[in-house]
Length: 129
Image (cartoon, rainbow, N blue to C red; front, side, top):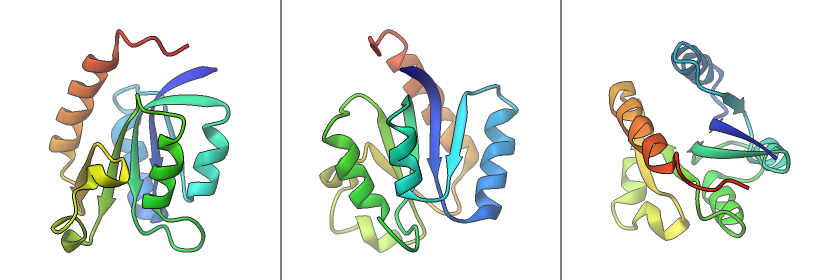
């Protein structure tokens, strides 16, 4: 199974275009999909070191259910929630649903990049087989 750096699950096209431009400039192996179902299909073919997942994906599975599903077979990837709903994680920790942490929209790219670089360094020696 091939290994990629980043999977972004986000249904807002404007945001996905910005993510693609931002991460592609840095030569990361990146996939961007608009639904949890598309992401689950990709996870049958690839392993991702880091995932950024919108909580509210519109129709179909939401980001929390996606994370719970992924964690059934994957405890090694870093999975970050992305949400505009700040109160969502004020009463409950994102880790309860299996997320590594949460980013609030608008996502501060410098913070995201710093976390990404730290995570990739931490995960570099992990056996991805």
